[in-house]
Length: 227
Image 1 (cartoon, rainbow, N blue to C red):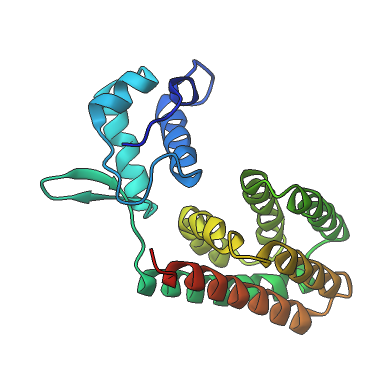
Image 2 (image 1 turned 90 degrees about the vertical axis):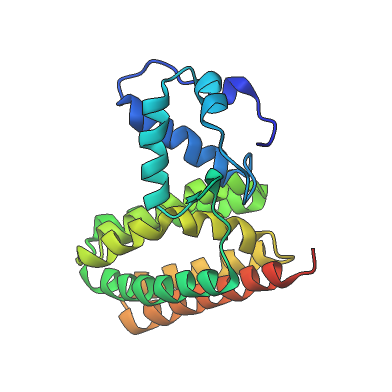
């Protein structure tokens, strides 16, 4: 297990259920790279770091396993998932189809208030993109897509995308680390927003599809780099 700041993993007493706090803490640590792909998650150590019981940690493991960001290896136990090239390609293909559809539907179905919320989320994205802080970018993207999904008028597509969300955030970090990708990604988001403002569903669908295709190519190029 990689070395981490004990205070970052310590669970504080708040109103959210304990299991949810543990899941959120471990998910954040994994997505921020504090536990590397393939790293073993030692139950005893995590209990000590977070000040929680083994039962609670095991419950969190099951949730994170269902999200595809940890896996249970026979004779090793829980480890941070390592996505193969084929799995990465599969995730992006599903995301491309569903998010392009959501963008098209949003352009047609969203209220003016939702379009304004998405515009505000895009402006926030522009600010954090310029900062280059990947944690802030991923958080801002979650807000952007949350608005997009809620205004698309289709319940199923967002549910499917939510299942993929943890893996998508892992892959966003990979794609955004590609040289020049931050600037290109921001331009693609502005293109999508402009199509939505015009209520042009076909252009919004094309913009979203192109954005995800470019992100996929960037992520796969990073994965294909020699170690």
